[in-house]
Amino acid sequence: MRAIPVIAIDGPSASGKGTVAQAVAQALGFHYLDSGALYRVLGLAAVRAGVNLESESEILNILLNIKIKFEEYKVMLEAVEVSDAIREEPISAAASKVSAHAQVRRALLDRQRAFRQAPGLVADGRDMGSVVFPDAALKIYLTASAEARAERRYKQLIAKGLSANMADLFEETTLRDQRDSERAVAPLKKCADAIEVDSTNLPVFEVVALVLQHFAAISGKR
Ligand code: DC
Image (tube, rainbow, N blue to C red):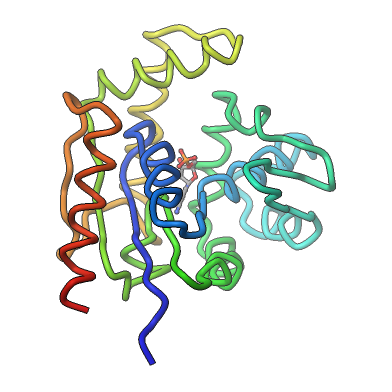
């Protein structure tokens, strides 16, 4: 039996992964997994509980005691919507910190793999192609210059009515990417079999079209 196809989209923060992955999922009628949201909810819960983000056992304990749910495109923590709260900058940093723990990552594996349902899945994150879905039909490594990414994050936050400062955002995203790339477990890296797409000067619709083209080319051979 043919495996349910997965399109893995990995890359650094604010490279456009989420927007592209959602549009690709919609175009193909596939399910969508925002793996970063899982780490963000855990980061939010940990910050609210006031625990030490560097403590693997304390973070794992929080993870095992909270209920995270996705309802359509809403993210819920204990039945309360936290879709906006998890996007704030302090929570981005907390998500990056809690995601560095090996046991935390292991505890979230099955949960992420459960999203793989017919007719297919588009998953975005840092280790979708390397760890969670190593047999993905298509692996995209989506990048953009650090300046373009900081600017995108800035615009996203302002559009949501949140406060933001370009210089701080640039520093925070650079630091976060460094932490995500240098950690020992499942670091952000381009897989050997991933196709790199630089979105610095590409509008979203072109990136989406490119991913769909690559998938169509593969599907023809499957
Ligand atoms: O994709 P994002 O920016 O929402 O992710 C938030 C943080 O979660 C990111 O800084 C690192 C972590 N993360 C991860 O370690 N592995 C993933 N697959 C997705 C996110």
